[in-house]
Image (cartoon, rainbow, N blue to C red):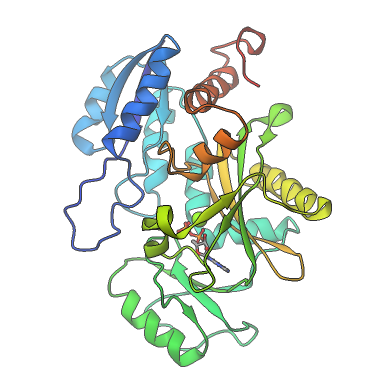
Length: 331
Ligand SMILES: Nc1ncnc2c1ncn2[C@@H]1O[C@H](COP(=O)(O)OP(=O)(O)O)[C@@H](O)[C@H]1O
Ligand SMILES: [Mg+2]
């Protein structure tokens, strides 16, 4: 098959150090390409920039492996999928509606909470906000409502009083566009859950726990950037049966509630009383080999990087009826 790859590349040409944190390095693009080619397909690369859109339309791809994060706007992750849907070109992963929803942390949390799944209490705020909701309990964390990869999350993003919150908000909204979400900070353990497949064949992969040092107990951008020296991981996480089941069941439900497809990763914090709280869903999880959580989870599960990539592709092909399930080793 002719498989297109859509992605955004890191460029390092902005004053804001984390502006391209969600984008991919050329090495990640090449690793994905090589995995797809090893499976016998032809690949065509499309950096997801306006100049390449005509080529994408004309290339005759039979399917696109989409991991473009999009350049701008609240709908940025949905833009390439919307174009592909419009053209009738099948693609891997979630559709434009699910991607639009999942990028918006507030909308996602409202849907998830309506499904009966615990998520920290929160308020959507912006630069004009001067008062916090009375039912919010400190400490609170302030983060962009529609970003990823810990963008806009700093060492001082956890606040302990209203004054501190409003002052941080004033400062941070001058750097990042868009709304912010201010949410109850869940002390306790952090886990992330990878999912592969659809419907009856949806698999929840072993849960990964991120082990933070005491003085850096959340993923600020600095901690993420220095994860190789600061963090340890445990996969499968050591969880009691009931907590494990709760998280697994919630992750499956959220996959359904948000209408996700083929692959996703979801973040949870487990409060010290044992309640898992859903933080956010990533329908386009990072795929940097040896760095991103999903490849790390797969490694622990005995799924090689190439197998992960080809499983995502094959899962999408099966969903689009381009492949019959029994002919491939989708586990
Ligand atoms: N309510 C919260 N309680 C505790 N830690 C949080 C909370 N929200 C975010 N964090 C920390 O910030 C990190 C990034 O937040 P997250 O919502 O996952 O956004 P991103 O899209 O940037 O990954 C989390 O991995 C976690 O370490
Ligand atoms: Mg996250």
